Length: 193
Image 1 (cartoon, helix red, strand yellow):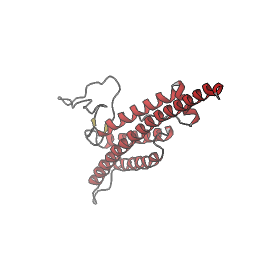
Image 2 (cartoon, helix red, strand yellow):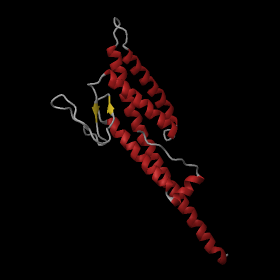
Image 3 (cartoon, rainbow, N blue to C red):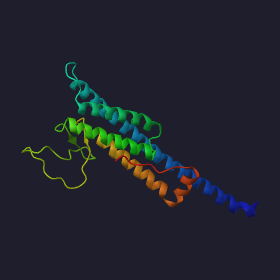
Image 4 (cartoon, rainbow, N blue to C red):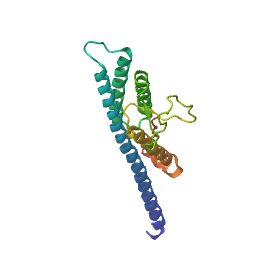
């Protein structure tokens, strides 16, 4: 027994390290899932806002304009993809499809309401305040997303989700934790662009 004691100690240390690394990865994964839940709630509020505006624009005497039909179809597509992504929020293909549907909805919204667009930075501040003379100034850099509802909640939730996903992905690709991720079959997640 005394000659096998170093092996038992090394085995116990390896087991404790594995459990600690696994718990760290699970904490980061849970943080990404919680950030997705906040993003999902913010996107649902955006969809409710869009559906309410489409219902207001629709009158019994006048048929729905083509831009209204495309906005309604884009909102339906986004709500279907939101429901699908809730099952596996860190699946890269699902998040990519959700991002595409989100941009289709935002494009349809901007075509129907070109003046009712508000952009926020990731911290919730207005990214491009309204021009005083009525003309837009050229914008250099990455333009933030312009959301239909004038609320910064969706952009803040999107940036928090992307940050949580980046931290999770960085932890999975580090060498010692890479072994744990491989053994436990943890995969990289995709941010929402």
